[in-house]
Length: 163
Image (tube, rainbow, N blue to C red):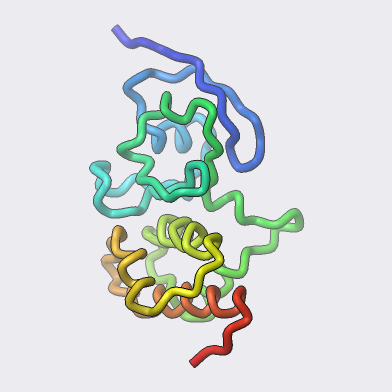
């Protein structure tokens, strides 16, 4: 017999509440109950990064994060990056400029991890960025272009000239 619990949290800037099965993953709740399809179901064991979301500013694999753990948290998905007029964010623009999008399945997870990196306000080396992005799998092998997009956005935000 399923057990349910009321969960209250902030989702992309809005206070929400949902009765959830205590066994449900955050991925399932976000996709099924809130129709946030940027949260991809990939490996479902926390290894591919396709389901990454920000929880209180930190990137997590939502497939291995129980929905009930979201109680009191601030959750952000890719949808939170869209501006009031539908405009895309600077990191999304950089992904397009650098051809860092191929099939697109891994893209939302990569972008949410990039948001966490960029919001630190730190200047990372290319090797540090590579390590910070290493929890993601891209079957199309767009890693270099993804790295270029994150580095480009980081440097633009920090006012550092590109090399």
